[in-house]
Length: 407
Ligand code: 0PR
Image 1: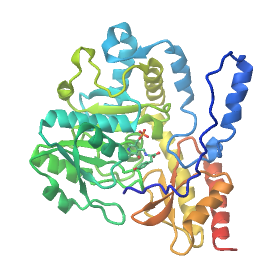
Image 2: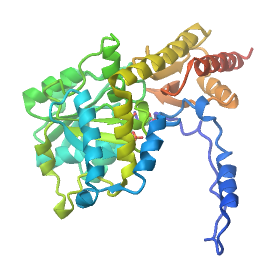
Image 3: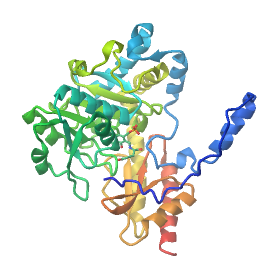
Image 4: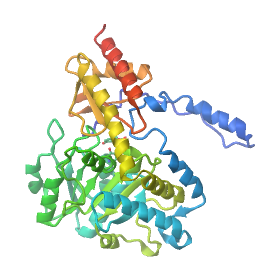
């Protein structure tokens, strides 16, 4: 899955001109104008950017709580200087762990999905104590696992996936060796938003005693609420006995500020395996703003389960409008029916890259890439979007498809 994003279709940005360190300071207004001037180069308005999973303002209470906690930090070695922030961080983690079905969850707030997944690989390696550690995961798993493998000296064995990105579970047993320290799967994976068969992975983990980590970067903040709303969601979380750690990202569907992720373990004793020396630092980054713990705590506590349910109901309504729009447009089709908020569009007759460029010209941000050699446009729809955005997008998609048909 190395080529999710087509490099050729992306704008090549020139390296900014050399900039010497300024001799004299500039007044505040001039500096802020210069900042605005640079940001004016960004091609998309926030509301029209479906190309990345986390543009848009966090929930308004996040900024308010962040201001309250603006002077605090959290880092494990200095817990006793900021016990209030420590409590906010750990309570936020425990709320998320509880949502994901753990009875006594522990863990930490991270800077996002990459750090959380790297933490999982490191922990599994340290618990596994193998001389040549290996992990087994579907080809679709996120880049962060390859980064972790590189940095932590772990080899990856890939479970092949079919054209709809479903892993071939009959291969898993063959890929497990005496060196395996972990199984990894995603709920869902990030390309098409396809849910891995977590239940089957959990059964293998139980049978073999292997560590199982679930990447619920997207799923953690939507699947539990979809289930509440009556959608049939297969088990994917700590309710499955084989799941030993999970992660989810507040900055995807959780309405939390960017750089807020959660790494959660079922059993706090597992964290003992991490060598922290006297620092007690279990994370891969060290000092973090207390504001991010406070903001996370505040949004979770303010929205609660019923608030998130409303958010999820609304965003799925936006997804439905986009999905029905795609199905109506001559020449375009969905790659797979969307389970959550990741929507993929492809074509058997049109030049998909031309459609993507047409959207871009019209000010709509999406991602153009290939999945198993098939070009596609990927949208990640955010909780901040409404029906008007969805309808505007569908109109632009219709016009871009018409351009690509040469009409
Ligand atoms: N796990 C999953 C399933 C993800 O989709 C992503 C990000 C991460 C972890 C990493 O999160 P952070 O950026 O917070 O570190 N996914 C990208 C996004 O949705 C897109 C993506 C998808 C990139 C698949 C690479 C990839 O292989 O914006």
